[in-house]
Length: 143
Image (cartoon, rainbow, N blue to C red; front, side, top):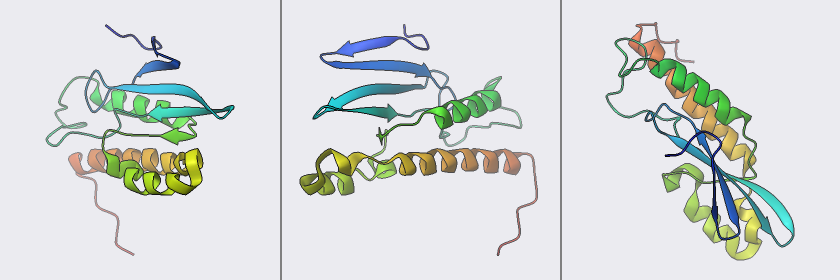
């Protein structure tokens, strides 16, 4: 059983678990601190920000507290400032593009703090759009 802040060592890598519920009640974000060629990097594996098809988050919620879980998770994920991030779906972080660039750029191809910020902001926006839709808010006019 993991608890928020628990750590697991795998060889030279220390992973810290953070409970980030939303996508599931047990969603866990992992943070690792790695050293490559003498330089330290913070690596994040964010979880909990996206929602499952059929989940209800505001009106007749899928579980009590789900809306608060998502908002707390989005805030917690915004506070993480990784150099490198990976995710459960490779297309989220452009695995193939980064692997290709790594052939010539090495670890620098993986450094993407702005991509992480955009990813989390997009998940947060999708969540708020879902809340608005469930509560029947009018859609903004197209520009």
